[in-house]
Length: 204
Image (cartoon, rainbow, N blue to C red; front, side, top):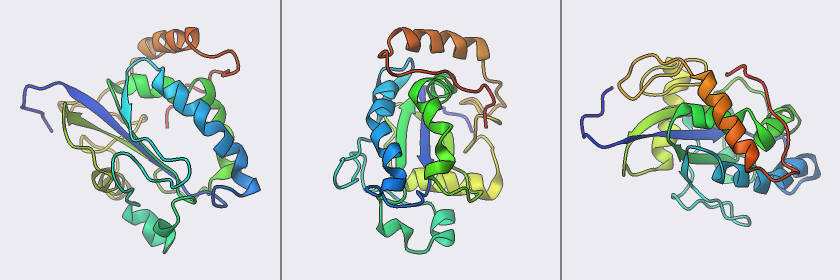
């Protein structure tokens, strides 16, 4: 897929998962407590552009009503009715290296190490990336469709993962690990002292 508008492109990134218990229950409270630090790290990360902001009480999003991907609705009938059980994030970045740096370093890397304590491991995709042109309307419907496409067809230019990425022209891409390391050092220099840890370089 090639973007012929002549406008700059950005990387859209969507994440989703099903908690063992709804937010507010003791089993997932550690996850909830970490959310502000993770969001703060994202906002200060090299290459971050913007994100849908979730209201802390209603779980509504600033980029519109969340849409649960069909593959999740099929496995968990009725799950879309309780957004406290299925957290979603939706963001825009300059490139995939910027997202990888954020995901596998700092507070988000720490959270990834505890994911199984909070989220059900069901084999469904937990994230998807794709390219959009500058100014492209961001909707959760598109994000859900992209994750369903990934689930059905596997990684490709339309929807991909860290393990099998593509550039904005639709060509297979190899992550620049030197650039990731450089961005990680930049992010670390701006990190609050209590936001620690680097993570694994095994992109999945």
